[in-house]
Image 1 (cartoon, rainbow, N blue to C red):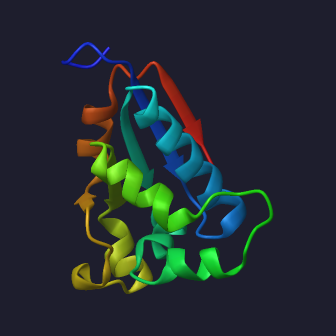
Image 2: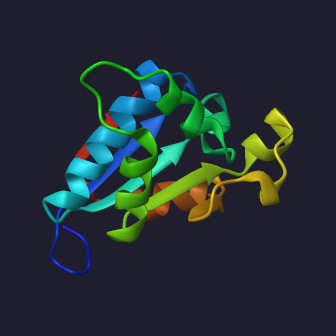
Amino acid sequence: MSENGNSKMVVVCNHADAPHVMPTLIMGASGVGIGDDVMLFFCPGGANALVKGELEKIREMKLKGLPDPVKLYNDIVEQGGRVILCELALENKGIAVEDVRDGVEVMNAPSFLLDAQGAGLSLVF
């Protein structure tokens, strides 16, 4: 349980391609939709998905039967979910902070682990 009494859900994404990003976003949006405190953590391998314009590229793939990744992302952020980018990804992937989507927090792994403690559900994609 989190401080507000809701269940805490953590989803880790370590790949920036649609087969990994979409389930991360779908589970995250589903979690905030049922009232969970959601934390999505993008490792360096998944970091490029959080660069401005990248979710739009996935949207353009028109993945049959799957929701719009941009809408999923926006829903997560608007409903209080946290989208966190591992700070190691900035240098590792050559990403400038100003190129990251609005709403993304940059955090180091130990801080994320401290915030994630007590999660009742954790998923990795």
